[in-house]
Image 1 (cartoon, rainbow, N blue to C red):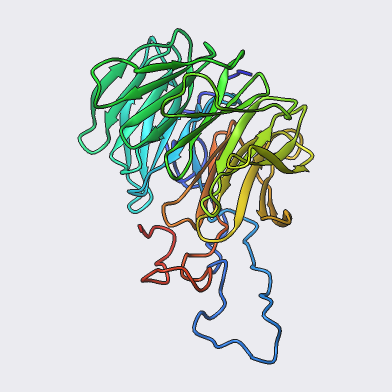
Image 2: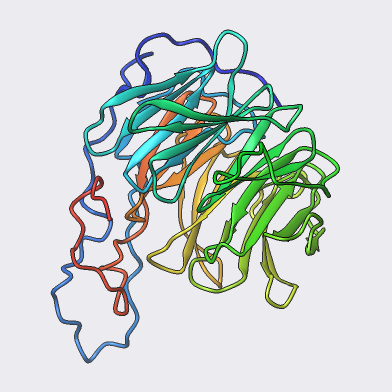
Amino acid sequence: GGGGGGGGGGSPLAPSSGKKLFRFKSSPPPADSPSSLNPFASPSSALPIRRAPRKIARSPFKVLDAPQLHDDFYLNLVDWSSHNVLAVGLGSCVYLWSACTSKVTKLCDLSPSDSVCSVSWTQRGSLLAVGTHKGEVQVWDAVRIKRVRVMGGHVLRVGTLAWSSSVLCSGSRDRTIRYRDMRDQRDFVHCLRGHTSEVCGLKWSYDDRELASGGNDNQLFIWNHHSTNPVLRFSEHTAAVKAIAWSPHTHGLLASGGGTADRCIRFWSTTTNSALSCVDTGSQVCNLVWSKNVNELVSTHGYSQNQVIVWRYPNMSKLATLTGHTLRVLYLAISPDGQTIVTGAGDETLRFWSVFPSAARAGPGNDSSSWGAGHTSIR
């Protein structure tokens, strides 16, 4: 649980140089693109078709200060939009950081009576949902910097949010999930009951048909748009399930990670309602995200190494272990081009890592018109 970060002042999300908000931290100059192989070179026909392992830079190429980024496992305070804008909840405020311009905008301030517990962008990337400590869900227009809706329904904090086009689901410490629709005047359309402790993870599948939820009751549930009870239940984890990620490559393939007493990443098929495999990572699993460009995923961890691991699926070989955060890596988001991840921790830093190849470099079968123009390209 809880504990806030220290109270650094200054302007958030500035390159880190002490205690300024979202300041650059001095860090090594950006390494060459992780895959500095010449994309136009023709492979030698004499060699077996086995690619050399990709080199992944072991240091972040950018570090931003994020004062008051809370060290609380149950919150989800960082999300990266399809418009290449990072939303970060810091205390009672939400800040927006443009990856293209590095410009910082304060979107909202809920003080003195409330604080931010979760943030989530719509797929289109102009609306941001904000879950609060008091149990509200607010929707903000990030272009006009204007609140467009406030919805009730929860009686305790809202630590997780998930969009499926106009549908927004919120998970709370009150153990319920509220299913909301922006086209409907009501605060919520359905109340999904099943978890017996705080709901801390929510993710819609890529086809928008299935909602996965994880709870502090160690349960992983699957729901659909019409269910108010779970349609599938996976109970193998032995600690809280916050980390949830659907594969963008295989229909119905779901990864989940367990907390300190569990430490495992488990893979499930919702198509066949079966457990597929399990890997013990050795530490608390805080987040998971799948690469869209290659069949790999990233996990972030807590006690005791606070590491970030890049895995190849399905053999789960480790491609890289990235360290540097001094507290558990509670927050994770991926850039719209799928090449960069940002990690956040209660050490009040956001770190940007180049981990995945561009869609074009990932190999044949990826229809992409450019080789990618650095870290701030928008697809």
